[in-house]
Image 1 (cartoon, rainbow, N blue to C red):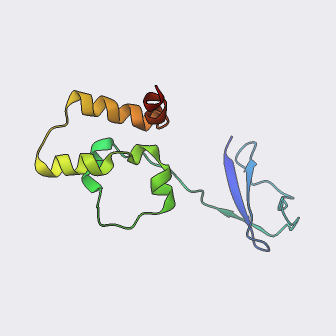
Image 2 (cartoon, rainbow, N blue to C red):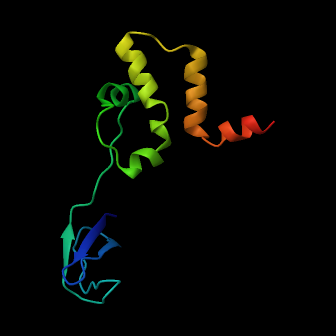
Length: 114
């Protein structure tokens, strides 16, 4: 069963609808304003980037959005980039600590409390 997204032409709110079969649903209305003037849109997609591609494409001079800093996968990205640029292979200890930080950023505080 496909999931379609519709954008309200009146208030621009995006609504998601689970569709039974492949026939466009009728009598849809906006959840926010109740308008029936909806247009089906192409949904945003996500894609996976390998960690080596993230390091290779990292630009230390580029401006960052707030989302960049909220993504724990970016912890240590600058350090990894600098190591790669210098031709230095990260040690096993560096890699394991970095992975721990990325999966549980609060562990830094927990480990230092003792």
